[in-house]
Length: 203
Image (cartoon, rainbow, N blue to C red):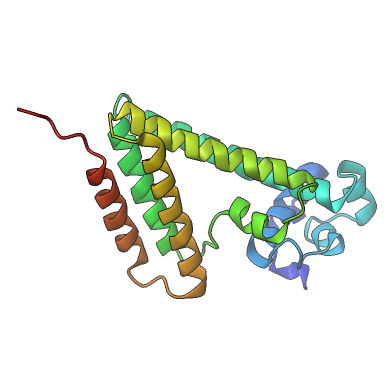
């Protein structure tokens, strides 16, 4: 495939080569898939060469793993912003997350979760990216469960699983069926799941 599809950020020589390579790889991997993109295309998009790429990343597999680590860090920063927006309000954080995810699946420039996409392309247990993917997905599930516990919702682990399943299903539908009304349906499903786990106060 052509490296011309990559963002021009990789051509900015004021940015160190390693950062340019990561930026180019992130753009190409996310838009076209990990398997479809070769190191030559990444090096070209980064305004460098394969020798420089391999000096910073011993293999394409290691570059993929670092790309996914950076994606996970971006998500960590998102969770921190969400916490700051809803300080002391775990239910508000949960609903804020749900609204943001609905917006995400509605956004036609998005191709779902970079880590989930990578999990499909990289089934080998020994691939260096597998640990990154699995650790991130477990951490996301635990964040949701912690919010559900803090919001005093019943069966918080079950609710976290249900919300994550709904989101992953919506992301697949966005890429394989249609985005039409998908974000709204995800919001309604999420609200219904949260309501079903609300504790009923006894008189």
